[in-house]
Length: 100
Image (cartoon, rainbow, N blue to C red; front, side):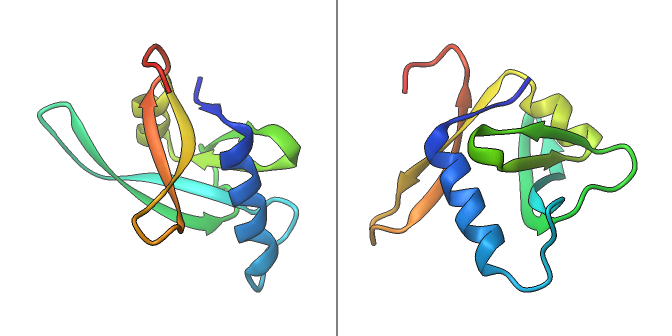
């Protein structure tokens, strides 16, 4: 199952609290955009779950929502946050057995 770091959960909570039209069910939703040669391109959005989605309860009450194909790809991954070149948070996905 996808693991979510406390830092990633904090950023998810910040995003959902700053967005209009969110509810308690709103979370960071992953959808599979394309898959080629065992590599996946994922789309991220702030959304509520739809039928068939998997919801991961992350630290601090944050929610990560995954459509079924994305959930399969992310099952052995960890979601973290790093800073980009401008100091802004950027989500990062790594295998659970890789060192941070």
